[in-house]
Length: 618
Image: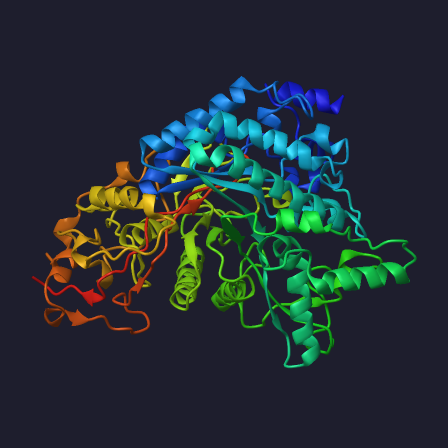
């Protein structure tokens, strides 16, 4: 009866595990909210595409809803939803009109309930079901999509959905759930990778990878036990879903296989609770990638020798046996000096953790091509989000450091373009560059301060810690349109074709870094008055542009400066708090938008380096 009611609510879409779980137990979600409408991007996709163009990004990451496009059961690939695919075609057309490429995720946790009724990701047949679904999507949309992600964060849903009851479908099989899911995810990804490579890649000319969740861990003390704890938890979390595909020899990590087998025997099991990969399966999965998608939000301190300072596992509490947590045998805490989010106490500001993770992946997996597919900071409602701005700047600088040391990072995406339904946290955590008014039937979007700052990062291909969005002194936020903005977009579009080639040298004079008439961007562009909280949500960024150039002394553009000899430009200073400190980024920048409403966000253009000189007055 419940499923039929949900089916009636969602026209031409069958219920997902999230639809069923949320409607069955509404107050399992924070504030008893649901994702029935969320940001309503199904109807507001044109506004979303316009927001992406306002930010200047080149790619837009979104996912396909499996129960929307195949609503009638496993194996019935002929019963395709015309309305579902029509929506995605409209969205893709809107993106391409604006020079924005789609980066499409096939699975972001909204499993059809009809498959969960058969065991979902713990049923080995899911490998074939997922391949059948992927084939349909490649046939329907593949000519317009060049970048694919098979599965988003398998560790998260295998653990939270099957090993625990935090996420739908809330199976809570702590002893075997995560391991059964893990093997099937690895093989499902590999089968779809080979399907695309063998049957579609030649004429569709795309690339495909998987996105994993990667927390970073550091030892709580200098004890060797804590160092061993770090190694173990990295293998049990990241390694369980990454080693079989990206390591030289494939298969699950040795420490995971050995420990689970040992504990399973001690606990009376006839076989290891971790299903083995056969030699044929190991070979099938090993090397099944074009790139590695990296989602990063958290860093923890790991320990085994509990002391007065580290006496509680803040993330999970005490592990019960038999269980995945007991197998890991690691407790976690946070650095006392790390800044914490006001709405998510486990979200901390620690850019060194991001750098450590990227370095670890380079060293352990022979430097695979990486696209950072999610990275962001949660806040409460409101338009002034300086904490998010600080976070993005710090983490982009950490990424730049990893790049300089040789990490093959091809792209970066921010979570998220706008606020959305954040799983069991509902709408209590806001990640968006744009705020969404969830109390309004129109779901109006309003740019936060971070949207303006991120737009400048995208435009300049640089992080300027002192940049402040210009505002007028009296009313709404106003941003000055750069004269080179069209050229900036053109550069992004032209260079997208070189995303996976070697870095191309671009003369500084060719960089659309700055235009004349509003002052030096490296010296602060701040107009009289402070940042205004009030923004007219009915206006887009471009509609809010005002001519305030008369408030600034005329300056040479950075473009002009860089065409002169370097001796005629004074070097950039690196004083804390001074906006003349600029970090060049040789990466693609983008904004990311949440999965199930359609969008996420893409990344910008090509690896370029800015002229590192401050513009003199004309």
